[in-house]
Length: 251
Ligand code: ADP
Image (tube, rainbow, N blue to C red):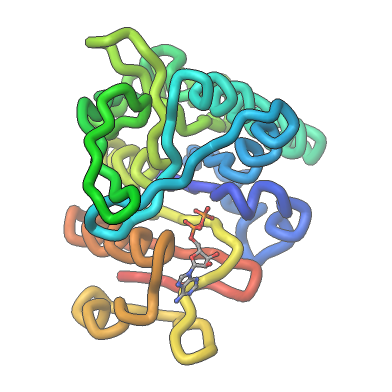
């Protein structure tokens, strides 16, 4: 199995991304499952609807979107649109893509974060009504059924069965959990850029070299590298960060 996660920035430039090395053949392979984000779609729809999305910073310095009930509605609609666009793109190219939201068939099970901490005007504030969550479990049985229909294309939205609500979850983490749950051989993060250090793409990284290179990565790239390390430690043979400028292979 191969899990291919397509990030928000890559989705809005998918024509270019599609042409990048090896991606189209991966997506034509019967052992692939696609997970996607949709950050740019969320930004665009919130602008159109006039729904302001606050960006907050956690005490550890990570920035995140505040997911109120209203923002959750925008998020769901935008993710559905991103899913449709990607499925249509693939279908036009002869790939039998089957689009689903992660909440359907309880494919991605999450848990709502009861408490989200943010630093606002220098003070740590506790937020209790946020609709973001952690990924708890992947329903592998439902995923295998879906694979019988075609290439699964899954929007990273989770379902919380305890509170019966959909949740905003991190797409990279959905892909990571899916790779582990399906004992995937390969995990591919498709983004706008491969991992860069000192102005050039790092083509190969071994697990033991990662700590010294981690300092070059910020934000989303840092998170991807840390997840790549955990994935390789857990038995995934290789993690690829595929960008428009090349690819980084982590083993
Ligand atoms: P996606 O939405 O595609 O999952 P992210 O925004 O999470 O992507 O992560 C990719 C981003 O990480 C890049 O667009 C870039 O701005 C940022 N980044 C930080 N450090 C690096 C680095 N060393 N090499 C490449 N990208 C980096």
